[in-house]
Image (cartoon, rainbow, N blue to C red):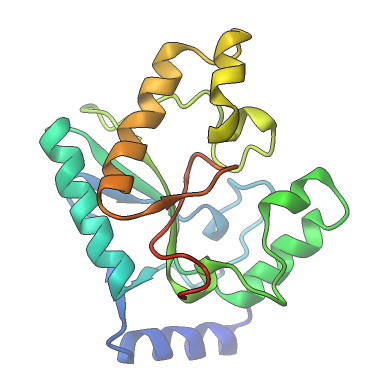
Length: 198
């Protein structure tokens, strides 16, 4: 994103009461992967856009999910990898994967992703020591092993362990109980509402 786009996007989000900025605190860490080089493209696509925003509906559900996580695991927390994603970044991601197997994991920017509207969040779980739980596949791992719908198959093949599945379920149970919808091919991605509603 260029500086003008960043200023315009931040100004819009900060004055619009429909969006809530997420802040780090006890049990919540913000690690926007596309604002770093630690992502599948290998470079920072967010520039000075360092804040994590969600639509207020999604933010309220995330707060509920955090409460439910803490009820089940009092010393666990969330780490947020991505929240509202500017459409200009969506275009960069799409151009990087277009025509590859990764195309199934990135929404075409012409149609948009729920991330572009602040209704999707990518996240994982931190244990009592602040370490990410091992999910058997990392964030933005475009292999089938990252797909929740294929967990039983990979468990049977020995490529996922019961601990990997249990760790994924810690996240899934909290998020789904709060009203989020799990994306079928990414263990880390949750939508606050169906796309048709958004």
